[in-house]
Amino acid sequence: MSRILTVAASTFRESIRNRTILAIGLLALAFVASALLLAELALDQRFRVIMDWGTLCVSAFGVGLAILLGVNQVHKEVRRKTLYVVLSRPIARWQYVVGKYLGLALTLLCEAGALSVALVSLLVLDGHAVPASLGYALLMAFFEMLLVAAFAVFFASFSSPYLSGLFALGTFVIGRSLPTLHQLIERVEWPALKASLKAGLAVLPDLSRFNLSTQAVHHLPIPPEAVWLPLLYGSAYLLLLLTLSAWIFSRRDLT
Amino acid sequence: MNQNPAISIQDVEKSFRLGLLRRRHVALQGLSLEIQPGEIFGFIGPNGAGKTTTIKILVGLLRPDAGSARVFGREASDPAARARLSYLPEMPDFYDYLKPAEFLMHCGRLSGMPTGRVRGRIPEVLARVGLDPAEKRPLRKFSKGMLQRIGIAQTLLADPDLYIFDEPMSGLDPIGRRWVKDLILDLGRAGKTVFFSSHVLAEAEAVCTRVAFLNRGRVIGQGPLAELLRGHQTPTEILLRGEAARKDPELSALARIEPSGPDTLLLVAAGQDPGPALARISAGGYRILSMQQPHATLEEVFLRALDGEAGRSAP
Ligand SMILES: Nc1ncnc2c1ncn2[C@@H]1O[C@H](COP(=O)(O)OP(=O)(O)OP(=O)(O)O)[C@@H](O)[C@H]1O
Ligand SMILES: [Mg+2]
Image 1 (tube, each protein chain N blue to C red):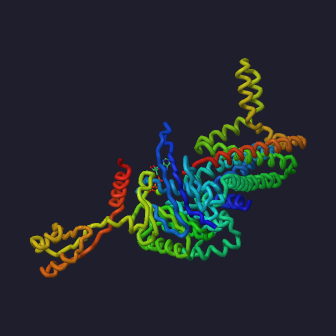
Image 2 (image 1 turned 135 degrees about the vertical axis):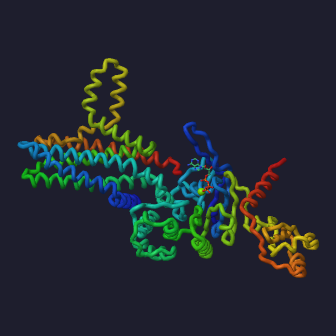
Image 3 (image 1 turned 45 degrees about the horizontal axis):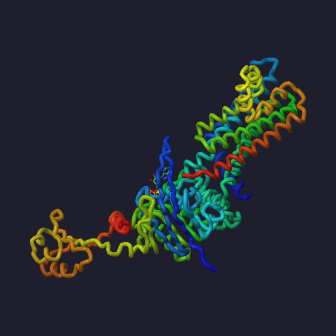
């Protein structure tokens, strides 16, 4: 366990000291803050605009960073050979993969946390009450980032960073539009194709369930199962992805 | 209790698949080696011989296609086998943004050392490799030589029994190479086992208890270096001023005479005593500019080892 945490701590430290990642974080903050500008244009709907734009920014930058880090973390260590001095020590490969993932999750937590705090401050500054549902929406958005990061790590365990980036982005986009896609598939006439498309979509997680921003914006009630069901389902997914990644990584030759 | 060898490699085969066609490229073929605890072992071979591949198998980064690699009796792929070894990669490159002390803490923790013990070791180890323990710059700002030193510091941290160094002297200046040699000798005196690779024969000299020559993924000779070099002598070269000696009939009977610019080079055949030639030189009043016995180069020793190999396998 201490070895996993050591890997996580170094990963986290490397990430937050990385200039590019810092720049992305600052840019994201600027984007969230720009909600105030947009609100000026919206006249009577200031609350809605700040909420919409703010949650969109938190999610978009979070998922972007999740893919970027997830795809690059391990690959960069393989390419730069920094991992030789890690894996030549008495640590199992799976411990390394889990540690990397935890470090990555911690980085995401910092970024998403900072953006969330910025969003809440904007709302307060602009004189709005902060709805409790925003808390749930942000929690779910964070969990979605974790899931996307796990996908990125998984794809990166067997393909190049560019490809894995594309795969992870594709998974995110498709995962977010699953309900729409299911509706489209219903219209497919050919049963064999319909069945295989359905099966194909079934392996992907329905990420639209992690998007509660509409409820938060419109003060809609969020039933408890809309939170814990996706969390449960997402956790199972995440564990599976990490297990697979660790398994693939343990079998790899590191040249 | 019978003692396990520090390293035992048996009939290891390894090939890489290259390109889209997945063509097989053989890196190691039937490699076997055994190194006992306390040995300082030089693993010598030209570029592409398979030194790094062998070392990566030993530290568990690669798996052999066939055969077995063991460290103190444990299969190299078992993380527990790595508890007693440390590894200096070829041309090491480390985390960009960590400071030396942070990097060493990271390494020590990964080796399973308690935080307190690592903290105590860091200044010792940094001092041992000649780096300032108060160094605050991140590793990305280090020069190649400093990275090599940090790389070595990292291997000393947990005080393991076996040190595996891949080309520890490459990229260092002569002082740095001298320092690495001394360090290896110190480790040897402390009873540690050192296994290091090099493509320069001279680097193994005066350090190794034993060497193995590797070529195209095969060991083509092993034993104490002096023994391998024996019978592989080179002519003694005596450089004389001017051209006067060129026409000396007595000298030409004792040695081969070649012009060397304005001067004259005398070559006393390998294994022959240069005494008589020297006597004649002083009798003739010729002036000696220099006298030396060049070392056999890796190339020469290799060619010989290859000949031996061919001779043995011939029917
Ligand atoms: N990742 C890889 N993919 C394909 N071939 C490889 C790979 N790594 C090594 N090889 C090949 O295996 C052979 C042995 O390589 P290796 O790196 O072990 O040599 P070396 O003795 O360490 O050489 P050097 O002195 O240049 O470091 C070489 O022919 C090399 O081309
Ligand atoms: Mg090499």
